Amino acid sequence: MLPDVLYRSAAAFSASSAKRVLLFGMSGLGKTHLSNMLRDAGGWFHYSVDYRIGTRYMNEFIADNFKREAMKVPLLRELLFSDSVYIASNITFDNLAPLSTYLGKPGDHSQGGLPLAEYQRRQAQHRQAEISAMMDTTRFMDRASDIYGYPNFVCDTSGSICEVVEADQPGDLVMQELAAHHLLVWIKGSPEHKDELCRRFDRAPKPMYYRPDFLMTVWHEFLAHEGKPASKVDPDAFLRFGYARLLDSRQPRYAAMAQWGVTVTAQEVAQVKTPADFDSLICLALDRRSAQA
Image (cartoon, rainbow, N blue to C red; front, side, top):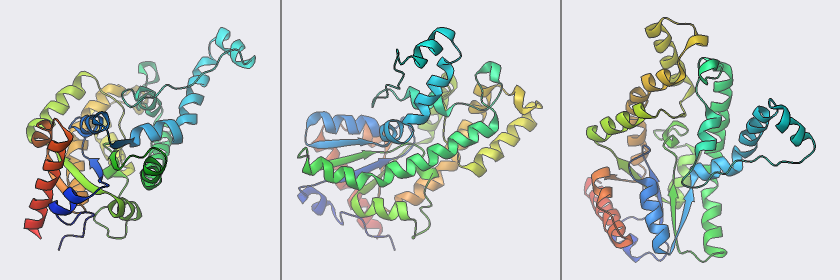
């Protein structure tokens, strides 16, 4: 039997004066596109988990890393000691580069890589930050309504949400909190979408979050494949090596999360142009869920 969801039918969602939706799935499939569209149309508060991570829970780590690099430059070192310059990250909904840069990539320092132990430390920081940012959604939902008067709330999650929850465990506290206050919506990609994401990633590899056990499995596989010591690893080559594996490992974890909510496809999301289209898509997904019950 499927667990209960916030809106038990399409009619209940349509009639609700306070729609609360959480979007999850791999990056690049439409979470932020939908969230921006709803926010821009009015009536929807857009809560970005990545933005919250970068501006609240990782902000000091990011800024301190900038300062550490600045201290290596004599002029900037002098200005920092005299409080003549201010160094901070400028994260926005559309530019999360400071967060990605801080997470970094393991491998050869001369190629921009981090020692594995430092990389793991930053990964652990991100894990705790993501959990904290997810647990903040209910408070932000209340703020959006009480302070700003937004009736509707959309939570735009990180692609790594499935790595920090155990959705197949009914007692998972993060999943319980999210499902109690949002309709969870999985944007499910197709094999064609996976291929396109891999091509996009191959052109411009970016830092990712990995579960600790999965990271070590892929790391040792890559070292064996390359026949190089860890200090000589090409950081981008490692990220490319692990990306498709990461996508594959996340699919069953997303599917387990979807049992707490509904599923739509990336193809369906691509057809959504207005809030009315979005409402219709959610109603369709709820009808499909009801048919499975």
